[in-house]
Length: 377
Image (cartoon, rainbow, N blue to C red; front, side, top):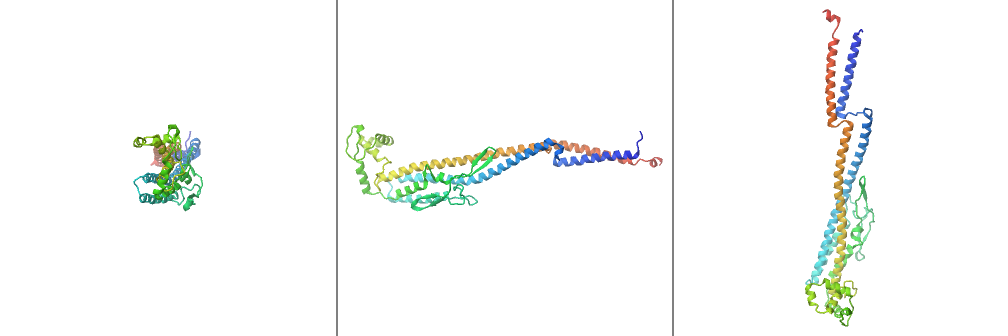
């Protein structure tokens, strides 16, 4: 078969062009991956697109969690301050029952409680970094609590609870309505403190104590067979409760069932006939405030614990989300050929093709210089 010079040139040029095309494509793959267009690997390209969409959704959840954390962090901090303040009020209520305290001592406690009251009102109307009220429900631009003086504190917000989806299967509360914190079924914190302040500001009167003593000095209890004429009769349950609550010293001093019955009558804080200004009325007010403050303290503590749990869960979801993001990136890298293994193979092929191209160019240069005239020389 006759091989012409033009055919030889054409074949060599085609070979070098193909090699140059391969080198250019491999050079591009080194920086962009082995799947430059969907036609290079349709299945890998489709899977990479789906994975990228999943990664985008995961990224959005991460942003939602950041927003939720920003919303819950000031709520948690404020709730902790509220828990501390209510705990302080409880301690001062107990101190107010000290029998050695004078009217002035109790008035000083009341003054301190007025400061705590204003402090709690400030917490109730606290705002976040954007100036939104954190305890107003959906009404974030409306001051939630208004002090109406003797009419008490009214709630101007609503019961709305803001939520945010922080994961594919998790929607989280990011706000707490103020009414559930300060005016829940556990009690009205502001009213409780106001009642306590009023009780501590009321001076103890000797006349009032004498009137109360006259009520309590004689009781009747048929279950013990003791007949003493007098005023109100306690129930057996009240007597049992007084006995159970009595200290050893009180029990030893109560020589008769009549004294135990009288103790029950004096410690029955459900009574409505305590003489204003008497020690009994003060003790009743302190006991009721103590019971209410305990319930309110427990209520706010429970809410704070729930918010804290949400923040802790957010950290866990963030860790899981970061792990997913790494997995998505690794999968996309493998599918698109940008992973280290694929890049090593591509780089090896590039070096090989560059070597072949260089050799082809040298061969073509040598062959193209051959001619009959050169031979005749």
